[in-house]
Length: 339
Image (cartoon, rainbow, N blue to C red; front, side):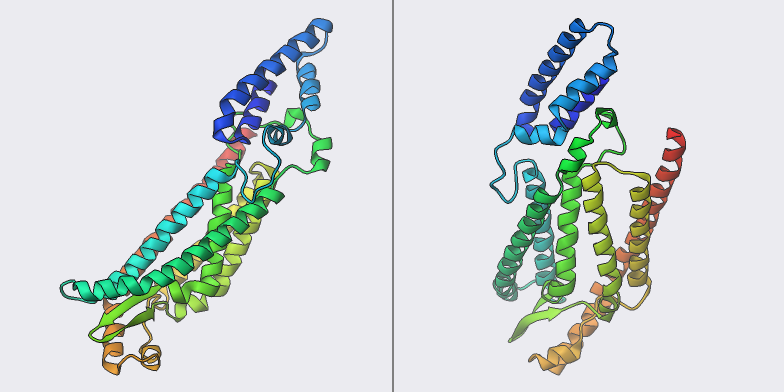
């Protein structure tokens, strides 16, 4: 029976992977036996009506899946733990990449010297630990909020209709793991853009007897911070909305396209506007660097790091435009094919 297949699938994807196979087999067997027993008692009753009545007795898939798991006494439950682990790994790789970039760009031109390299690594360790602990705290907070806000409400459970179950191969189905990872990464980006970019985007410069942290981001990032915050807030809100609904709808797909276009505008302004990577020599002098070192390093960053970032942003802009076009085609032709 198609409805039973769809119901079992919905329950399965709400469970941790280690439980899915056994629970699916047990649940399918129970439903099929109940279905056959009821049809034997009422052979004239419509098969779909029988399936609907049985599934209503079992309740919404999310609630049934929750009954197979221990009571929620955790910040991050087993259903979201794979997403939590993936998010931490991705953020850790980004953090390590930023630290490595900061160390390497601080060495300057010429052959690599072990002493300044070691000094930069030691100096970066404290920032790495602080950033990593902040990262873990924010990720746990985001997942704890999602754990407690993305479930099925009691009101929707009372009016739940088994006929509304999505097909197993439904293209509008929401990947809960992917959506939660996106929420976590967007939240971290919002935090770092507003409170931590000065400490994360830069280099651990070591020249002669002078060494220390030098921030990289120029005024172009600050000038576009409002637009970035707007995009992130809209994206996070949309993700929570879609996660709550459990599937993509026409309206949410159009809104998602809108945020993609806003992001394309942001990347365009960064790629083709004032330079993004800019060392402020006055800041360096005020923080103890010599005027000679400050002037040299500002020029070095302008000639090496800034062009590379500019090229990456231009590529990102065209890639975002292609992605937006693909979203638009999917919405238009997807709606036509389903009508």
